[in-house]
Length: 339
Image 1 (cartoon, rainbow, N blue to C red):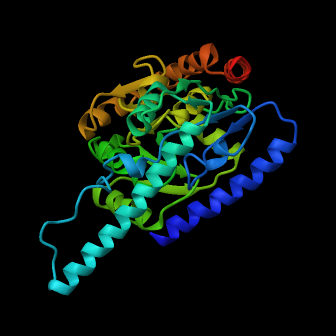
Image 2 (cartoon, rainbow, N blue to C red):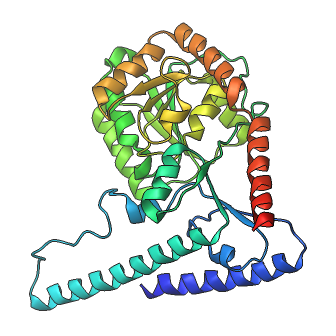
C-alpha cells in the first residue's frame, strides 16, 4: 500500500516539474501516452495548454477478472488461527485501500485531459466502463515498408507474438496444436518483448506434456522478426481481451494470415476469411481446426497471406493513421480556442 501511494506522489511531482517546462515552452498542445506503471498520469492536471491522451487501455488489473478482480473479498474462512486470520484481514484492508486510491487517481487523471483517444471501439467501451468517460477511436497504422514479405517460402510452423505472460493465453495455442495429429502437427515459435520466467516455465512444461514442439524467444531484432513473420504458416492470436490487435496487422503486412480468438480488438483488425480466421470461443478443438486450414496446405497459407497483405495496404498503413491523429489534435486545439 505505502509503496503504491509513494509512487503516486513521486509521479505527481515528476508530472508537475515536466508541466512547468511545457508551460514555459510555448507549445500548442500536449499529446500524452501511458507508461507501464500508470495508465493515466497527472500531467494533464498541471499543463496550461490543450491536452490529449492516447490511452491504449485502462489498468486492466483493476477492472478485469484475470484471474480475479482485486475488489473481490478473500475466502470467508481463512486458514490458520485467530491471529493469522486477523493479519490476513488487515493486509487485505491495506491492499484494498491502495487499489482504491490508484483507481481514483487514474479516473481523475483521465478526466483532466481535454480529449481521450483510444486504439479500438473495444478500448472505448473499456474506458467507459472503467472511468465513466467517453473517448474517440483513432486507429493506428502499420509501417508496411518495414513489415513486408521477403519472398521466403512458407514453413510448417506457427508463430505467437507478444509478451510471455498469462494475459497472452499461450496455453490455448498449445492445447489447440495438441488437437492436431502428431504427423502433421506444426511447431510453435513464440516471440516476446519480455518473459515472466515462472509463466514461461509453466508453458514449457505444458508443451512437453502435450507433445507440442515449442520454443520461446525474447527481443528478436526487427530484421529477424520480419523474416520469421513472413516464413510462418500462420500467426496465432490467443491473448485475453486484447485491446487492439496490432500483431495480426504486422503479420498480415509480412504476408501471413492469422488465427485469432474472436474477442477484444481482434474483432476489429481480423476479418474472418480475408486476412485470417476468427474462432468464436476459446475452444482448443475449434482453434486447432482453424490452424489446420493453413498449416495443412502451405499453398493456401501463402494465398491467404497475399490477401492479408492487400487488406493491410487498403486501410491500415501509416499515412492515413498519421492524418487521423493530426485531425484529432487539430480538432482539440480548435475546441479549446472556442471555450
